[in-house]
Length: 365
Picture 1: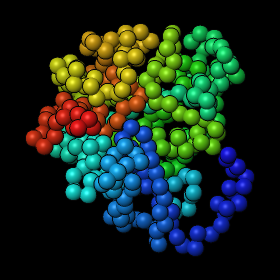
Picture 2: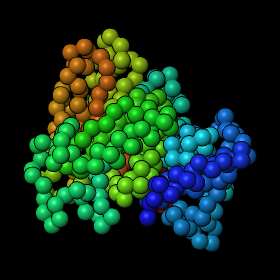
Picture 3: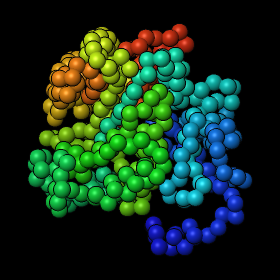
Picture 4: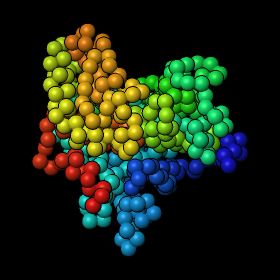
């Protein structure tokens, strides 16, 4: 049971010059794990951080007879929970034989993004999520019943319309402290559903920052005795699902005449629709029904200001003739490395070393 008053007493104690580094990684179920280690001095570069290891047989990432999985630090951030010079460390998972763990999709995405660095591709991800109580009921809903139908909750204010704003505000501040490029928050269409946006970020930084922002949300929620679910359809019926809308632009799209390149990209995405759906989140078929501001999972579509299409071109972009497009297909539970990887592969071109669909299929081998 959390007791912030008691914890504050210990947080004020000197660390005697030592630094706590919280190593974070993605497990075999697309969830986050973490453990801390003590360092002797502050960190000024990723190269200051040593590789570490963990028991992969307890995280679904290795068999018990050969259980060690290695942690490779790839980025780090100020720790808003411990403060001081303490840090959060995002890691890739590697096998002892020098190959990426089969659930490490960052490595492949990074190869693709670096190969196309000249395109200066930007991503912005809109992470929707739903709050649950500790018994897995939608947080703040009437016991054994339902709130009023959807309508007053989106971007809402006021008692009865907004649930658990304190959790969201705390997460917002934690992200800003950690240096996450969080660009905003809002209440979503279903009550107790919220969204935060991260970006624009260039290259692999998009995936790193979204995963760390998710870690921060899970940790903040702990302190409020609340759970976070990224399931794309946490409740059946006439309620909106949860997505992770993916905003994309290359440098050519962001300047005058860029609409030509946006339209070319949309044509490429249409031709690879099934491949993208494969990587766009588990149980996404429950969400992409053609209702509740989604397109059908079976058919690709695009349109200006159309939130019922696969790809939306924002109205200001259509007016200006340049900017970005929004891929509305990704579910809330995506691995952002897979999504940024396959989007880059599709609109910028493949490279011999990487096939993002095959990369995803490694999980089942």
